[in-house]
Amino acid sequence: MFQAFQFDHIEWSSHTMPELIWWDVIADRVSHRFAAKVAEEIGKYFKGRDDRNHWWAFISDYGQLSDEDFEALREHIARSDVLSLVTDSLSDFLDLYPDCPLARLSHSRPTGIVDVGYLSRFENRISELEDKRSRNGVLMQAQAVYLAFVLGRLYVKEGLALADFREVQHYPETEKSEVVGASICAAVNMLAGSSLPKYEDDTWAQYSWRRSLDLRPLDFRQLAKDDERRK
Amino acid sequence: MSDESRFEDLVWVIDAKIRQELRLRCEAYTPDFRMPEVFNVLTALLARQATLAIELAFAPQLWNGHSAPLFLRAMTDVHITLSWILLDPKARARQYIQHGLGQAVLELEHRKKKLESAEEDAKEEMMQIIRANESWINTQMWSFLVEVNVGAWSGKTTREMAEESGILDFYNYVYTPFSQCAHSTWYHVGRYNSGASESSLTRQLWMPRIVESPSDVWNLNLIAKYLDKTFNIFDEKALGCAPSSRIRDWISDEIEARFDSENGKQGSSVSD
Image (cartoon, rainbow over all chains, first blue to last red; front, side, top):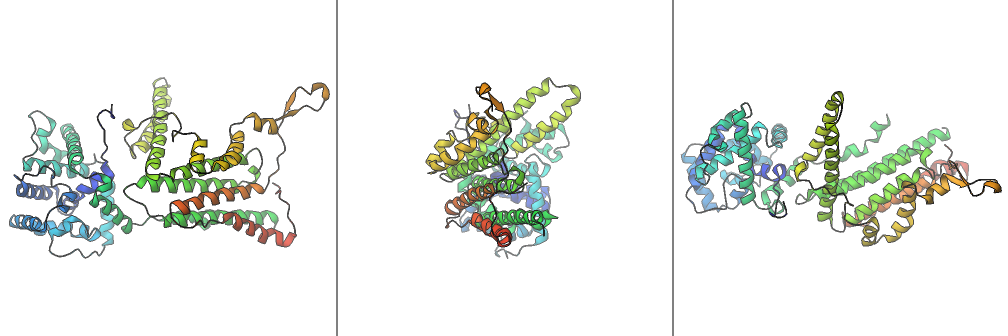
């Protein structure tokens, strides 16, 4: 059956999750509500553009913006009074990943100085987000769906789970929020599947994993701890 | 120091040497995140080869014709598998993982079927096993998406894999003979577990037996030889450098330094 449909995988933990991670960084540093405000402003900026290839929820989307476009986006966000908080909330993350396309949100280059405390915190957040059905995982994906609503590119028929989108704030405490959460996950799969570059060609995803390896090199010492084994 | 403790010391040193050689290779190998499976599979197979070598090295009572071939055959299998994957790592590492996951799904389905008819008090424990297995599969790929392939993982025979890898001699002279022991064919059983009866009156009948097969240090040499082969092909094909594993020579030097220097001459057999 899968072959008949030219079935293709898009993997959550290696591909979609790093593309959406910045929403969780903002939520972690400020709040989910603030992340939604950022999504709203970005959505307003891009609304009406004849661009079917980008949803502006994924980090890779921003790698394709020209400098002029980025500057205009910055000015738009600055006018809505969220820019400084966005750049502040992303600064530690951008110091970890200085070549992230979002670094252009700020006029100053990331220092690249790693805050070890933040690195551990970020690592723990990632651990939770590996489960796309975790609370933070679902709320992170909800920002992408919200952006699609604001862009006017996603419409939902009354009565469908996504029509109760706001219920996601209670995820996973209520039965209804679980249904909404599942619909969000499915919708994000569709968004990611239709707009993200293939994993192998995804410059941001590849960079983020390589850089993560630099930040946390694999420790093979456990293979050769003969002295401890001998005791 | 007694011979026994000197010998024990030797095995620990061999263990450390193998682990160190494994570690050096893993550290030297840079993963390509476009295909992380390649790193995962190649380093896992190296670790598997090292494990087999260490486990057998630690068990001199198994260095005999009954048992050593079980390990050595597994080592030849690892070597052929690795050699074949290295010819097309991206596709074959994935194929290797998918087959393994398929086998796990198949086992899972068997367990679920058994659960239906299980006694009530056994169900919870069975469920725990099922959940653990399912979780292991799902961390890699959703179990419902895994294709179950009951054939060989590569779609080829081991002989074909060896031939394509240019190591058919290794298959013919090493893999095949050791397989006789692993599969308990007459080739092996007829030598190690049966023999013509002593009396000419009953010569037609062969007696079951358990042949005395002394522990032979030669098996340590073979362990090191196959480990060298595997490490060296990894050096060549994965690291792109000259083969540099000389564990066999190193072990030989260690034995000479630790035993031969005092005893003058040491036989090839090591007593249990």
